[in-house]
Amino acid sequence: MIIDIHQHLWTGTFVEALRDRTAPPYLDGWTLILDGEPPYEVDPTDHADRDVTGLELALVSLSSPLGIEFLPPEEAWPLLDAYHEGALGLPEPFGAWASTCHSEPDPERLAKDLDRGFAGLQIPATALPDDRLLDVLTERDLPLFVHPGPAAATPGTPSWWPALVPYVQQMHASWHYFHAVVRPRHPRLRVCFALLAGLAPLHSERLIARGGTGRGLVDPGCFVETSSYGPRAIDAIVRELGVDVVVNGSDAPYATAPDPGLGEAAAHAIRVTNPRRLLGRKETRT
Image 1 (tube, rainbow, N blue to C red):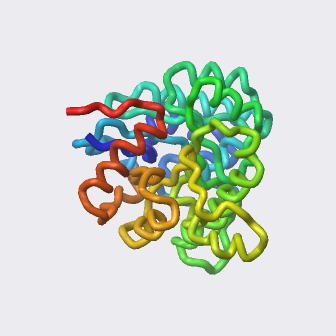
Image 2: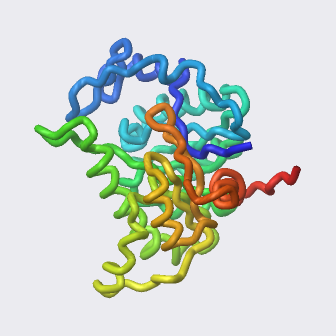
């Protein structure tokens, strides 16, 4: 049974919380209004019944590009609570990542949320991780999931621009910041970067050329997730990091989980063994 660590599903509770707002981010019917971006028509079928055949676990996460985590606490928490309530009410095989407020971090509130059964904490790549929040994760032996955050629209660019330019740039910055700043302070923390960390690991030669270190040293607690990429990118990442830190993610409903294209053993590692290790689960033998 496959594990998908990266999906999005807006429950009715979350949708209503967005509709209750009159300032961005909010929903007008199914029209999403964000700061600095044109209105976006959400397809309600994207967040209706979803085929999860063959999945042992599908982890849903907050849509960090909405910018909810950066709102003032009095605005952020009603939306976060609505997301948490809806996500925890989803049937099997769904699970969820918790989210939290970054404008005013609250470690005690995060601890209470995590103890309700979340798989770990998702943060936007644009947030500098707060040590107190990371300590809460380490104390519970739960992982961190780094996902792209808000990206302002660039006039004159096509619709795919945010996913290909600012999202990738954000993931590059968060990957290098984690290794340079966060890892020395949190050596036991497991972390996973969405979209193969924007292929940041492939820039190790340039890192070394500019005075960085660490090429050839693979951090077994630092994972990358496959959403929106395919066999060529996955193969390149495996050549740099090895297969043991690559995990399966789809970014459903916006994309589908790729076939790694590396054979049966590698596919099992990416889809089953490695996600279990990221999440601190033991693999079930059949």
